[in-house]
Image 1 (cartoon, rainbow, N blue to C red):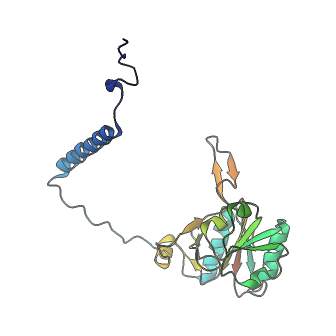
Image 2 (image 1 turned 135 degrees about the vertical axis):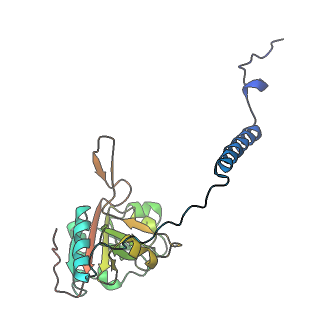
Image 3 (image 1 turned 90 degrees about the vertical axis):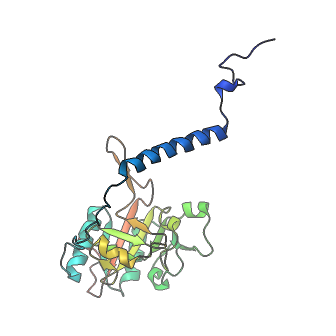
Length: 243
């Protein structure tokens, strides 16, 4: 008869049940927490964190805010355009055509007139597009919840005309419309009170980009390779913008 060696899988000394591992982890956690409680016992209450910092760093000037947003969006390698409301459909059509977009994802609630000049096939996300359909879609056109000038950030909250998160992460081209001045704020502290934290917020600063340890930049890995932003104002159309 062969006696199991200490290294044998059947040896009690070489294995432990999941329950014993859980108990060990739990007791270790309790020991660590007990030491922390003992260390801070009798310590004074932490002081209140001062909240008197600046909530903005630029003047309250709508035109200056829009210029700053434009500059910072372009700095993040977004393509930025200016348009009037009347010129918006034609500009969207030109942008889509320039990228050769043959199919366009359409989120629920997107104004129909925005795509009036678009030549590509419109693919409504109502009912939802399947993962293979979405992956085969060239572009998506959306609005936004707001845009932050100081950081060059666009925020989506899944509201009408914006759609679910996957809709703006899978297609390689995202065309996003920002209405100025009503959707433009100066800073993150001014943006937060206008956003609902229970909604699915997506914060976008330029096209998707990542880099490896050698700092080689690669775009389009975690989201759209190309971000086209259209700033809509009541001023004369300047769809070529500044960049």
